[in-house]
Image 1 (tube, rainbow, N blue to C red):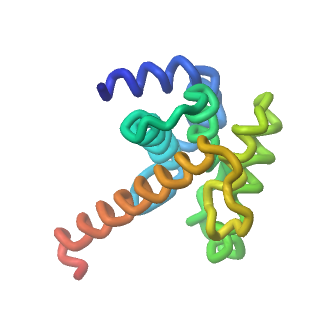
Image 2: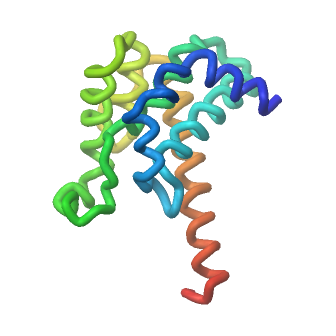
Image 3: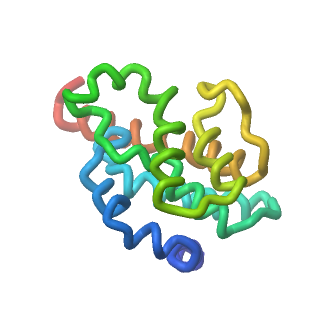
Length: 160
């Protein structure tokens, strides 16, 4: 089953996965110690799993592509040079990700909605399509898991 999801991610997102900018996100931390690249692939995988598990009919292609690009802000928001963005990153990064993705890819309306609305309810306007709702929930799930995994690692090292 897991291999099916990775096959779909490769099938629908090969150009994104192979792009120089997406590969560079491997060096940008998202949550805890998880790189943006790994996080985005996990969100794509869990989005597919969620849609299958709940039998939600949707465009798998747009679901995968939107999930891969939802955090395409192309910087490490933990870096000192982004300190002014750090506290507001959650509010601003969907717009930045959409702008970056639109520069490199021909985005559909669904893909744009996924990228722009994935931080709902922080982004006040809710998603308009099933695909965006699915990615929003998968993103929250993956983020929580990544944050908790990072905290567990620190605890084992004696920080708490």
